[in-house]
Length: 43
Image 1 (cartoon, rainbow, N blue to C red):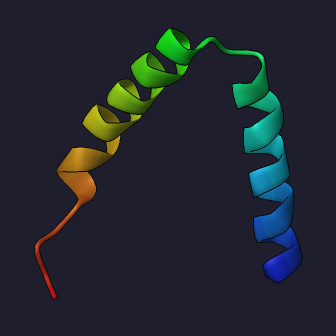
Image 2 (cartoon, one colour):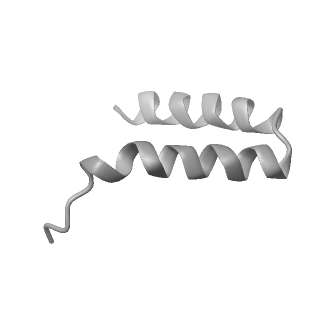
Image 3 (cartoon, rainbow, N blue to C red):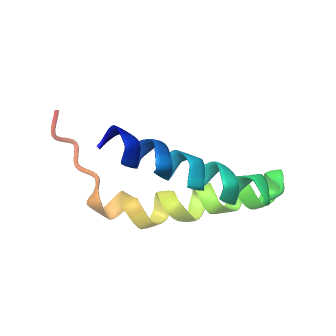
């Protein structure tokens, strides 16, 4: 499982490396909008 997480992080770094600061900010905003409905306040 640790190797899969490391591979995922490597892929993310490669994807983000090709984006400008503005594009990374836009991607982050869009991802927040996508995952927000699935987040819970359960602690």
